[in-house]
Amino acid sequence: MVTILIFDRQSLYQASIFTRLSRLLPESTQISDCATETELASRIINNPGATLFLGQISLRSEAMNLARQFSCPVVWIAERKDEYLPLVNQPAIRGIMFRTATAEDLAACIAALRERRTWIQPLDYPDDDKPSLPDKWDLLTPKQRHITALLVEGKQCKEIAVQFGTTAQVIKNGVVLIYDKLGVRNRYDMLKALLEAPPTCEGASMKPRAPKR
Image 1 (cartoon, rainbow, N blue to C red):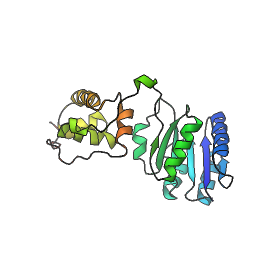
Image 2 (cartoon, rainbow, N blue to C red):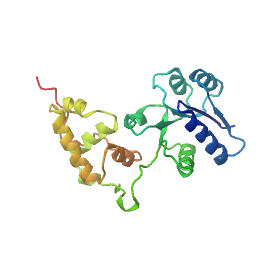
Image 3 (cartoon, rainbow, N blue to C red):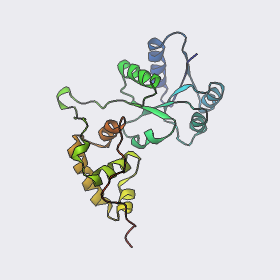
């Protein structure tokens, strides 16, 4: 039996997710909404491998530690202000959705999880203003590919600057150029474009240098 556990500190949204999933999934699916983190942790122990929909919970919480321990895929319910980009590098997190998620978004998320794919809810753009996300890696220089790979790993500009022996502002300026070449607006769009085929640091013409003294 497939088990889904839901916990969100915004209780009304938790109830909404519960209702939508109940309508979307077959009756054989066991869906439980948890009132507290303690209840969530207990249910994870009793249902190893359950899919979790979690909002406003600490990455260092007992429940998240148990999710990693018991191989539970997590769909993170993010606020727009959340630092959600590095989250896909967390071992347990397999999806990211916003509170604007529709029933169609939930269906797409469930389908991706069944196929063991990572899923990120698309941002809302007007139909005539969606970012272009084709494969444009040939437009990037080896150094830009290297920087892009580090961004995908969750590195911040100041960390990348240390590796390349330069300043964070220089890296930020370089990132803007990368956005322009890839036809994306921000790190979110870039990360989404890279999920299926992330670049590697191989072939970069500029190796990280020791920090300047």
